[in-house]
Image (cartoon, rainbow, N blue to C red; front, side, top):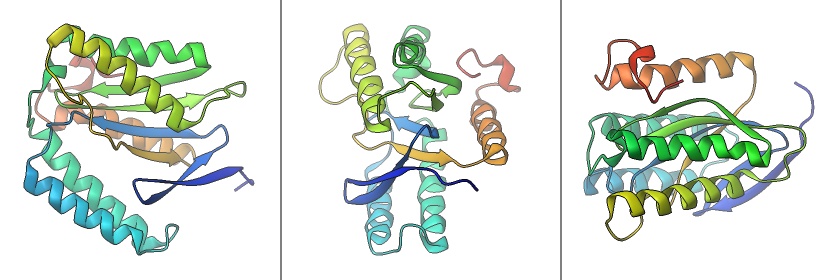
Length: 198
């Protein structure tokens, strides 16, 4: 694998890496999308991650456990599920498309009732970090959704999940995962039927 420039930082006590011109899989969920007992279980897994070498197989296994627990409950459709409505889902898609202003594409995504997934790909001229991109996406979409549906307090969960897509095999696996989401959640029979998946 060729050498890539990375930047290590901590977000909510966990180590993260941003890769120069990296392709990322991201998941963002609504703030009310998980029951309290699940939030506590995930906090315990995250606390364990702080004690593990971040590039170890054990760390990767714990991340997978975290993500599988998270997705199981997200697919159950807990919370207000305001992204189920077309006008609200459209806001998320509009903001993903607007990333082109920053020289970033989102070629694959799935907007589910209480969360969304996307692949974000900066081009060679992009000057923004993943953290900046996510702040923009979450901030702009939250403001527009709150104007549309009302409510108070944070719309999105503070933390998001991100994973650097290391190679083409992982890219293909991630695209399949995104497309399978609405089918797995029972929203449609085939991913092509889901308006909010590409």
